[in-house]
Amino acid sequence: MSTRERIVQLIDQVPDYCLNNLQSYLQGMIAADEAADDAYCEQLHQAYENDPDRGQFMSEDGLCKELGIVL
Image (cartoon, rainbow, N blue to C red; front, side, top):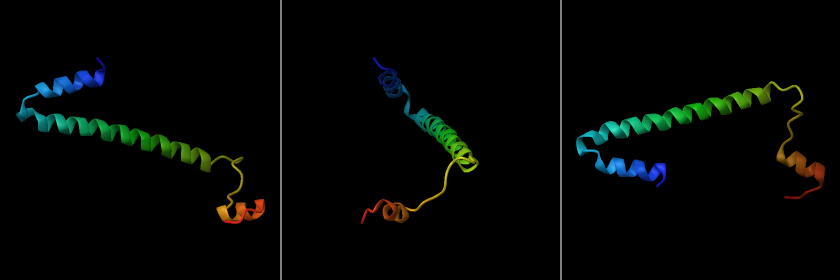
């Protein structure tokens, strides 16, 4: 049995009066993960922005024109 399946079994045993607390707890865990993901993405973005060897920006239209591609 997977961890997820066991958790579902346990949730089925939680009394109804506790479900609001459980829901809040689970939503907090998800938000914490999203915040960590956002912080990691921001760190990657800043590293890219500060990289002196990142090259120059070229628009999609400019790239297509340079490569002779007609959209």
